[in-house]
Image (cartoon, rainbow, N blue to C red; front, side, top):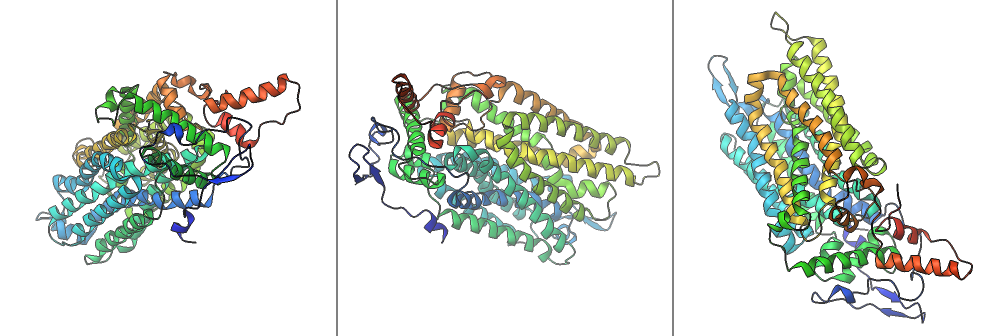
Length: 579
């Protein structure tokens, strides 16, 4: 079955419990009010349909697999440039001839521009993505920005002598990558079932690490080629990832929450039921539809469409917008991209014979350790993982910087093999911590904490902050390392420690909660260190179920315990029990 067939619509039947007859549901127009969308439970009796809810359905897996390819596009572009800047042919084509060494080299300025202009493009793309996504939808936006990235790759590949064309091509490609880095987690957060949302959003980072790893492998295989094929092959393969993403996304459904916001209530219900693997008349689907209805009405009664500045002036939005900016900035300031962008140069200076092999090893560690991260985010929670990861990376960078500065260079000018080995080991330890915590979970946090009214713009601003620091690190690293060598690592170590402190005091635990419940948590000013045990107010449907059960007990009648779907209704959404 093709991807399109997985999401093929079928007639929706709503069962009338009182009569036992079935009638087709009518499609709601975009002008209908959500109060008439038939998303609430029946007024008399228990839910119309109940049954087990699958942990992961084929449709959910396909959706996550295809759209996470945006992470592969992101990671591949990030990883490939590190190998390019040390390839002999790439330096000959775009570097400057040094008469004293009789070799082609990159000046700090040219190196910084070629590497860093991608990040400038991504910053702009992240900001442009929000209004387009709110106008044409998440799905079509992803395909559009994948096309923009392909244009940027073509610009880069079409020259073999103009370094500024490569730099500008990376800027154009960056427009697409920046937009995708915000749109993909947004689409995933709006579509994923609540019990696997953290893992699904984390799969974006998994594909980022996969892209980095693949770029390292390709560079290892092509770096000895003495022609432009050494770097053009790597670029060309990057074109394929964007093509798969842009074409594949066209066969996916629109996110249920975006469809609902445009008045397509039955489309939202159908897609949600497919992703949960249950009937459209299932109680869990009705519960989530009612949560969306309540939030939709609440946001619409505030005003019409939200102007961009309301991400700072809306209810509790200044706090959340600034928090998103801070955690996205800190993800860059962990220093991970210092190693991914300049890893070849760093390990060459550490005296390693083949830095390409070392990068493949680090890329494999980065990719492999992201899998445990997908487990940890749903079993240990967001806060614990981020705090532990920040402290772990702090220790690793302190050792990396200390050994690099005090123990690497011997008196005779050579490098200590032992010190170089220690640096590689603790780089691997650092990457283990990053790829299981701050790598995937930051995107999860930012994808969850904004209400639908402000989600696109807020995620765009937070993502732009990430890419701003990405540019600053990529551009200024050659200058900084020339001045203070491996002591640069102390800067990143300090930021890792600060990140752990900020998470403890400001980031709420959102594990297992619906997006609407998370919004209520922030509006209620819940203390972050108490957020894991916070119990939200019941929705009308949960109150109705509880009242029925209590009435049955009060009459002394025999009753059955809540079904699995009813338990999800009482725990996965607003009536979450203490943890």
